[in-house]
Length: 115
Image (cartoon, rainbow, N blue to C red; front, side, top):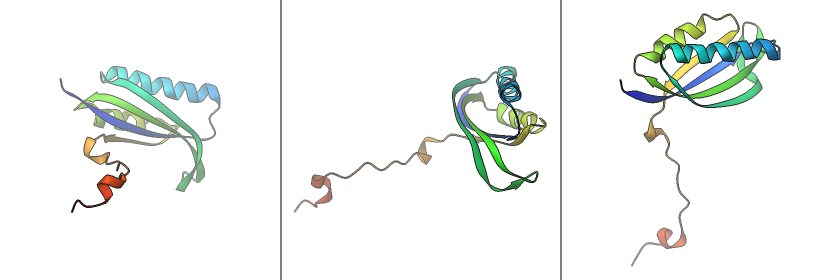
């Protein structure tokens, strides 16, 4: 089955202690194993202020996962994570190379037109 790169953005309840937070992270890993996904990288941002209140809370614990998933797995993964009580938000987005349009700095030779 063909796999694609995805980004999973998770916002956990900010009132979780370290043990509870680890349980939630383990649950994410167990779900990945169930949908036959591969964890590439985890970027934990920690507590951050939310753009708008969720469940009357103004902060959340952010974790950004980079994944390789089969094409049928993102919907299953996202819906299973949303059912967890300590997960405030879960969003799976397919990573597309055309979205990475980093501009390289122009050199002086490229900046001046050839006469």
